[in-house]
Amino acid sequence: MSGARRKRQSEDPLRILLARRSSMGDIVLTMPTLVALRRGFPNAYIAWMVDDRFRGIIESHDCLDEVISVPRYRHRAPVYFLRETIRSVQVLRERKFDITVDTHGLLKSSAFCLLSGAPRRIGFDDERRELNWLCTNERAPGDPNTHAVDRYLMMAKYLNCPTEPIEFRLPISAASRDWAAQFLQQNGLAPNRSLVGLNLGASRPHKRWPTEYFAQLAETLYENGNISSVLIGSPDDRKLAEAVKDQLTVPVIDAVGQTTIAQLPALIEQCDVAVSADSGPMHVTVAAGTPVVALIGPTLPHLTGPYGDNNIVLWSQPECACRNKPRCRDYHCMYEITVSSAHEAVRQLLEANT
Image 1: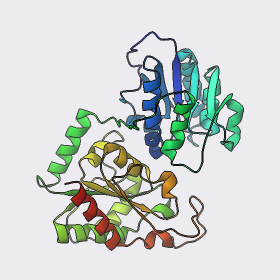
Image 2: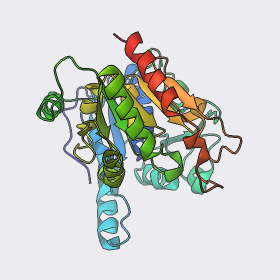
Image 3: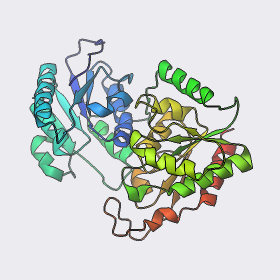
Image 4: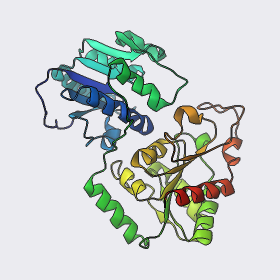
């Protein structure tokens, strides 16, 4: 369901809906497109349609007039899903959008764009998944072989919006920053001590670095550089956090499952460097301005790796490159990324950013 509308800045009739429902990483990667749309249409009314579980990551973005939440399908509550879907469609139609910009490319986003009643519904010309193309009536050039940030920006270029400089403008509230600082202080982080964030999770098991490797890295950082580590992850990653801590003989700060989606960027911002597999928090790290050591196994870093230069990618370059459908059971590509290489990468980034 939609949240409260923010104050409109202009009476310009142009109304734009940016459709990117999920996931966290792709939402962050779409933020430069939002900034470009605002740059090209400074007086337009711009809203973002997003799954209700992810609204916190964009809710206070300074380029948005409104965030419109739509429900995620819940198998045990079809009546709820239907009711909330109808309400969301009513909200979309009430806004009388002129243009919808769909970077998601799936039916679950394009169908809402169609039901919004917008006369111009833009999708990518190379996107044909789930019959989403039946819901759009304009095609922006797309390139599946470029980084996701640059691909999504093609939508803004199609609408003649200037895309440079490329900016995320990740919204981090003062309240979230205060929470992060207090959380670290209460958990024993000494002033002026270097802090490395260890993001344990990923959307699929074959993208995850082994817990024993994270434990060894935390030990090495603490013993060789007197560097503290904070474990980062969602509530679903609690078992991973416990597995890491069971193998440790040095202290770490455990923030897994203790941050809201709005607090996560503030905590990552407090880190000097973060270590992460290909995941949403990896992209949040880049957008927050924190250097990241990216642990990439089955995916392709030039498409979905960390964007920008102030990062180091450790990629095992497997010949199989299965991405989302692994054909092995040992996930050897992630095991091939060594603790020593990750430690060296962290050290390089710490030295380069001090």
